[in-house]
Length: 86
Image (cartoon, rainbow, N blue to C red; front, side):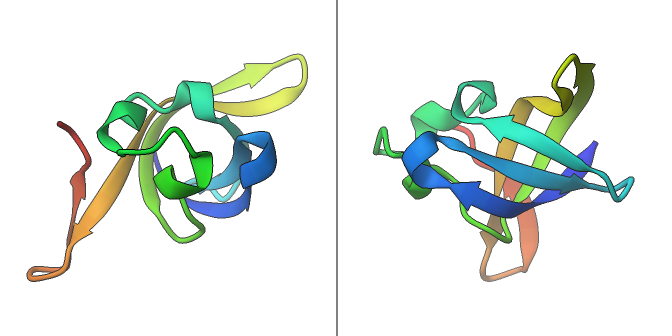
C-alpha cells in the first residue's frame, strides 16, 4: 500500500502514516527497510511529514501498523517519487 507520513515523534523513533485507504498506521523506525540509505541513525533525518512511503499494512493487538516500509524520495527534476535504495 502507498501512503504519506502525517506525524513524526523523532525523539521516540516513531510516527504515523496515512494509507491510501484513509486509515492511520503506526510506524516505528525498525520497520523502515531502507533506513541504512540515510547517512544518519537519527529517525528525523530519515523520515519527515509529507514523505511518501510504500508499506505493508498489518493489524496488531495495539492497532494498525505499517511494516516493510520503503521511504521514497522525490526526483526534483521530474517530480516523480522514487524508492530510496542504495
